[in-house]
Length: 104
Ligand code: 2BA
Image (cartoon, rainbow, N blue to C red):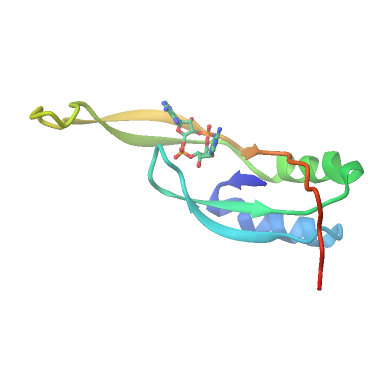
């Protein structure tokens, strides 16, 4: 499972498909920036995981984004938003073992 920038999604999917990887794209939202990103799910044999990660790594660029962070904790305090620059990765990749995969 890889969380990537929306802008990189179609190119990454093209490259994965070309190499024979099946992939599912989900529209997702980052919990910190509260803005859209893309989550890709791909079921692959263990030995092809490095190849898959290499494709994602090649295509996904990190970008700087400005987040609006608020002070105040909700207990009567005023929320004062202030800008904060964060570097949003390339890709956040989770490699998980799957017990079973079936197509019926
Ligand atoms: P967001 O949660 O919107 O986070 C966007 C970027 O904001 C992060 O980039 C990081 O640079 C910064 N950030 C996130 N949480 C922060 C915090 N509590 N304090 C200060 N800065 C913070 P990335 O680390 O490259 O993450 C990009 C997106 O990947 C995240 O979007 C989230 O959707 C996902 N993600 C990253 N790590 C994750 C994890 N451990 N579990 C689940 N989702 C994750």
